[in-house]
Length: 333
Ligand code: SAH
Ligand code: AVI
Figure 1 (cartoon, rainbow, N blue to C red):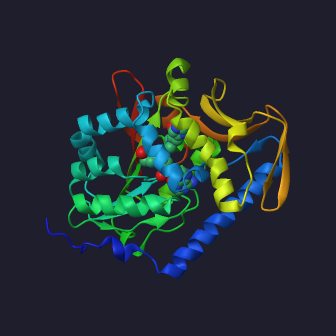
Figure 2: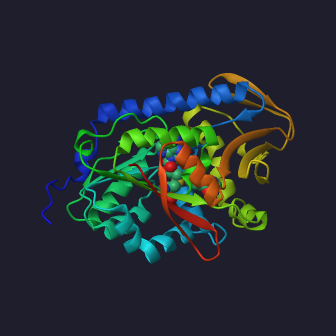
Figure 3: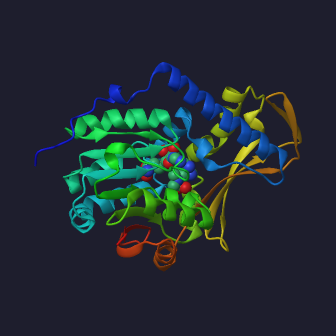
């Protein structure tokens, strides 16, 4: 098939140094506001999208290689085993929009299976990851036009002009949807109906409810990579906001909250201490927690009910034989 969209070099995607600097300032400003607000209220909590600075994104990639962290391995295996069937069910589309694309490694499998995508729109808050992923993908998918959006995918209101008119398919991998509260996930899915439009197919990776004996080690690995990922939030505060947090006086904790069906990650103060951020002082009691992430686990029926309530029609679901992880295909008629 002749490709209508010319190949776009990654350099073409880079913005001018001025706008890149102002984007970084905006990101730092948002982080500053979130941290000041989070530390001023009790109980303390921070949105998990702030994990993903360059260091946090690299640590997440390390997590995906861990023995205990099954989601990436199982979702990749599902894409490898059922790629052709999934592509057939998703149907022909020239535009692929991905939410929380990260390193785009699984995207490469989907792109190869789909075969006909000429425009790829990855949306992610992590600008560095987006640039690296675009370069990595463009070396492997000849002629693919990549139009990255550095954005909070819960707020994305428009797609690049080139992506607007054609039929679109969407991808939301890794069970990142589980990092949203149910109301936020519902709002995200409603917004996705608008972004992807009539006739769209949307492939979503969703982690399944399971024995906490499998879940807990996945979020509290022996090598301490997940702990480093969690504690990096405090290091980011020191790096970007002139904080003086003694990171060694906080510990990583991951618990399974059965009633909410979710893993919660926390940072726990190991001592009574005062930390300074942007010239303000915040006191922590010994044992006081900062809630840093939720990772909701779904049943197949539970996720399909959520998708239906947001306007999508659940069409197919692929699950591994150990019933660890699911890939849902939703349609918008
Ligand atoms: N989809 C990839 C990456 C998952 S990690 C995979 O399955 O391996 C989660 C990704 O979502 C990170 O790249 C992070 O930067 C991004 N992310 C998290 N919250 C986000 C938000 N609110 N808006 C945009 N991107 C977000
Ligand atoms: C990106 N997201 C789906 C991961 C998860 O499993 O909730 C982030 C993560 N947190 C700790 N380990 C991995």
